[in-house]
Image 1: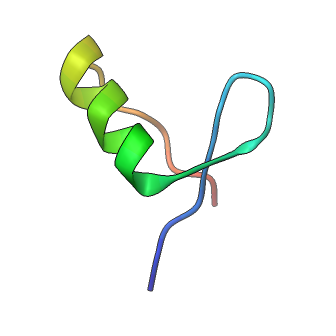
Image 2: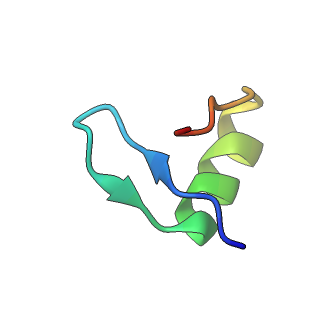
Length: 33
């Protein structure tokens, strides 16, 4: 099961970009439930 995450603009963000952003920012992103 893939988790879908939303960016600031509410668009669906690819998991690879989400992971890259999380590592780069060092922040924990909220999952889109």
